[in-house]
Amino acid sequence: MVSNLKNKLNFFEEFKDYYFKIINDFKFDYQEDCKARDYLSEIFIKKNDNWDLENVIKSLNRQIISKPEIIIYGCGPSLEETVDTILKKKGRLYFNRFINLAADGASVLLRKRHIKINAIFTDLDGITKREFNYANFNIVHAHGDNIDKLIQFEKNMLRFQNIIGTTQVEPLENVLNPGGFTDGDRILYFIHKLIKPLQKLYFIGMDFDNIIGKYSKLNLKKNLKGTKSKIKKLRYGIELLEWIKTRIKNEVYVVNSNIFSDKFNYISVSDLLKI
Image: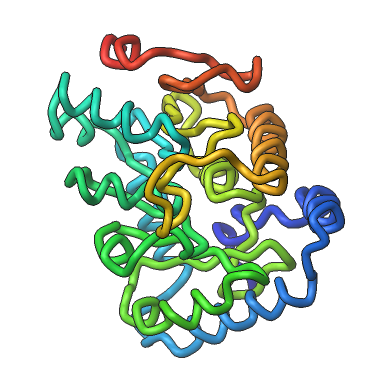
């Protein structure tokens, strides 16, 4: 029997029309997505008896609602400048007032700056095993193009207790589908059923311009102009954020980024520090 909390987080029935639209548009392989999901599921089956998905979700939920403000960090080109400006003006302890949720490679910068990461949402192509072991929780996403990464990180996933698996096809007993597409928007999809209405959300490094941040991939040394495919993914990211925003009551602020949608509030770093 599926537990209430897992059932609450599974969003595939509501999201599946978007999913099939996306895979048709990008010519993604549904069977490969299923294969990746099944491989991730097998890893969790191998884990020791102390790992229980329901308990991990409950633990993550307690952490997410433990503070009134949450920062979601994307890998956009404004990430480094914004984080470093805050560090310069307020110091590292300022970040402790927030729950810090990192999209994939954004965690590389946070680790280097010694900023606590409550959870990383990752398909494993933007992080190293150092980031994986640095976060309190890892939410690992399986899709058809990252099976090699699942294999590479399998031993780490077996050892790491606070881990949750996600998929973009039908969920299984031990792998969730919270909806979402990119690492960044998938964070909001995952937490939208867990957060309290009065918690404030801040996006840092959530840029949807044509420039791809250097923390998006491990091998990037600088920000680059996005490919047509990457830019199309970002456009979907905007659309999906707008859609899930209608399902929450929380105030959402985009910090130090260009306006990409009229559905969000936009503030500078100085504005953030005054709140």
